[in-house]
Amino acid sequence: MSYHFRQENGDAGDGACGQCGEPLPADEGTGPCEQCSCACGQIDGENCPAVVRADNRVVIEWMPPHLRSSHEAAGNRGVYPHNGAERLTVTDLCAGRLLGDWTHVVEMNR
Ligand SMILES: [Zn+2]
Ligand SMILES: [Zn+2]
Image (cartoon, rainbow, N blue to C red; front, side, top):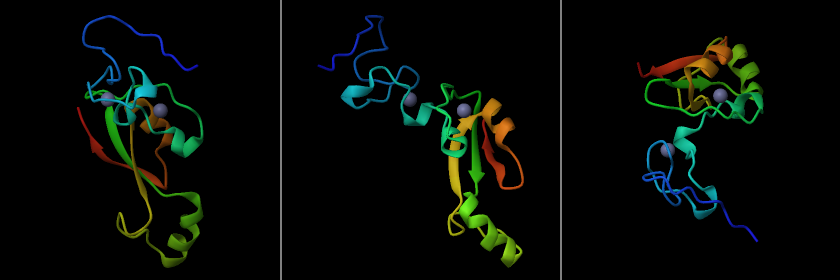
């Protein structure tokens, strides 16, 4: 039995993201959808509850650890997407926590 509780409050309707209104798979309730959820968990493994909105949205480019040594050896880090880096949409707060030698901002909506 997997029945989700429904909120009857206008536009946050069935199977749509409460943030952007994008339709969601039936089992995801009111979202946030993939685009509206912070993707920082792909880096630190934590399940981040933050919601990405237009005013806190930051796209970061992150080099997975297993690729770093080869880039270090080559003396550069190549160019996305050929270098194996990943682009993730996160909140500005999470971006600030994650930035470093192998993570930088590529897009910031302010
Ligand atoms: Zn959404
Ligand atoms: Zn996050």
